Image (cartoon, rainbow, N blue to C red):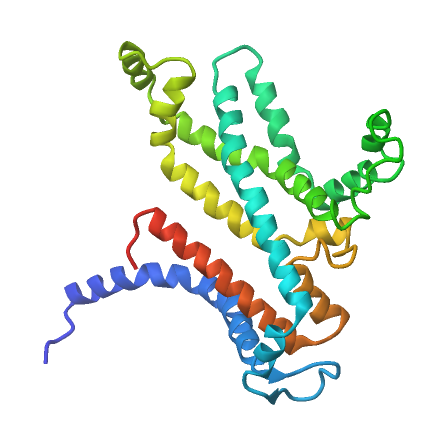
Length: 296
């Protein structure tokens, strides 16, 4: 057997040192993230509701069968997909345009950057309440549109408008955040690249199509996946502005999960919905890895 020499002991210490630094964080993550996630996975195969003092009863795939026949769940899934399709393209394209505009070396441009970023630091609760007032029957928006729509638009009280009205708040909040991500990417592109493109005849708007967009592809992929994951997890806007109504027209998966868990106390069914949500987010994360060229 090889003896543990002082040299080998030093090598072992050097290799174990990073893990000792990570250990406190791993313990906290284990207690607050990994263990609850495993417990929720287990509860999705049990019956655990109403009287939470009773032990969970194993029911197998009964919750998943119920989920497949639940019309409200399918409606919330469709609403979430609509949210995804409606929000993500705007949050991928519009912040890039804003980033290009505020990346110009003009006087006072820092003030514009701060103005566009201000919604990001505003609490979603505050933003939701403010927009709820704006969308009110006698709110500012209906007052401005009074000449065109005398009776006003039922922004939050009509199934046709409620979901899209909430989506507008998500877009308003996210523009500045993704603009900063793009701005970091734009500032990494040297001015000599644009100068060379100008010599080749690519100038004005065309230079952004020829130079900016290709070089910004990693940032575009990052923003697309992050905004998609955020769109699938939307909750605060719905809770504050519509509470999923009217007639479940603005109810998303996360809000339905919350409703089942805390309003109806159907913990096991809520865990089943959460598992479906986890699989959706996991799929989006895998897409992000492939877009970044990471092999699994």
